[in-house]
Image 1 (cartoon, rainbow, N blue to C red):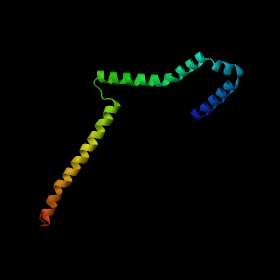
Image 2: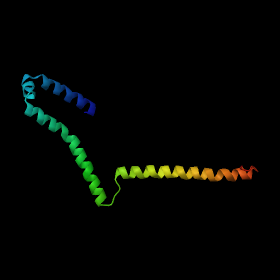
Image 3: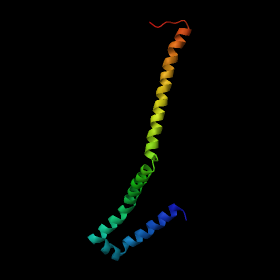
Image 4: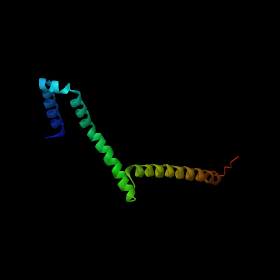
Length: 104
């Protein structure tokens, strides 16, 4: 069963449940709604918790995190561009003097 068909099946079953009068009455209870909202927040909290702990472990083991590697790559790319610009600027006066041109 693919993820798309599973999602469709779950949505169908959810819609059936929501049309049941017993479920509707239950959903009107504030305590139930509060519990449902807390359950829905669990995946986000879990992901955040996991991400934070992975970073702590990486730092404890002196490993670079994904964000740090991304920042380093960006810095290296920027430095490479600066070096290329400086090399072009350095080569430019040489090529002018070779052609017999002088800078005034």
